[in-house]
Image (cartoon, rainbow, N blue to C red; front, side, top):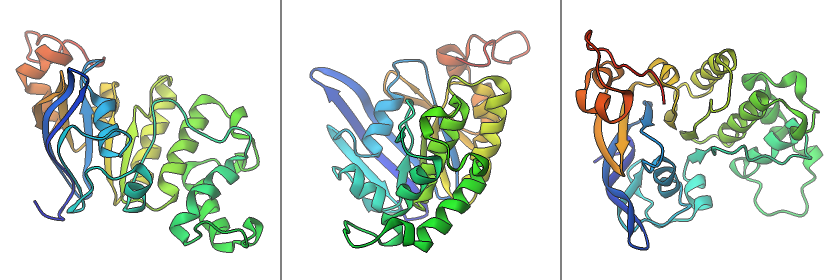
Length: 260
């Protein structure tokens, strides 16, 4: 394993009491790859994200970020090493404006630690970074709007903006298009493609049109184990994947089900 990989998971396991949720996951994700993790409900996808981002401690195994062992580190420590994530449930400061939410996410990366003597309004670099992110996520015209009043799709875009604002080079997105209409989902895919260019993206997603349209490679997680990893074409053609998740293969060899 080398730093050519953004993430390396080695024999990762997680038990809750006697129940083993993640059962020996090993996976390497190269720098710059867009990697999707799919699987049926209850497969352990969000638990795997929680292990990688430090929310849950692993029972055994190892996690490496850019070649550095981060196993057992806390979420803020992992974030400061260059990994950022979003959540299934939108996690924003609802009373703060769109701009203020983004600006908060920039501060640590710009060198502003715990400080009582810096006035936020005078931090020109934080302001410039926040404006840049607002432009990239298409919310410049909603700059001064309280986050709680945004539409659902706009809130998801804002959360993606917060995820990238600190400059992390490894981005984890947990079901970024969940609950969206087809047109909203299409716009979200374009946004994700644009803002993660040059970064490593790992996403959990149930919408197969999103997965097959965005991912370079796909891993299929079933009952806490990865049963296949490959290109979208290889995953489409994999009979074990068809039976376990995508649906039984039809006469033409195509999966019978396109999404969960």
